[in-house]
Image (cartoon, rainbow, N blue to C red):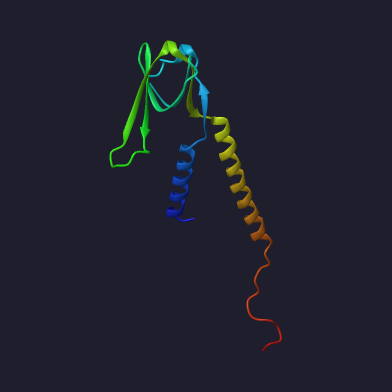
Length: 139
């Protein structure tokens, strides 16, 4: 395997590993303001209103959610901003990498690649050795 192909495979594996499977996980009330910013936030308020934000920042008593509005025409993207008091938050879920799913997907892919490589290796060993020259009796 040449160096260029090896570098290509390493880059592909690194890219695939960086894009792991994600899932929405509930954040306990005590940890709401533990991080100053979270990405992929879903908020359910005590009034049964649901909000989906691209990211949210947390202050001592409120959260500020930001959502890009790509549905508008024009060059400049508009961001919608909504502020919610932490006392009004019933449930907050944030998107995190789910290592179990990521391991299953990429582990399964790795097993398939190794099995394909071993199969090709076994098939190459079973090939008959080519005989030099043509068929006998054609001189």
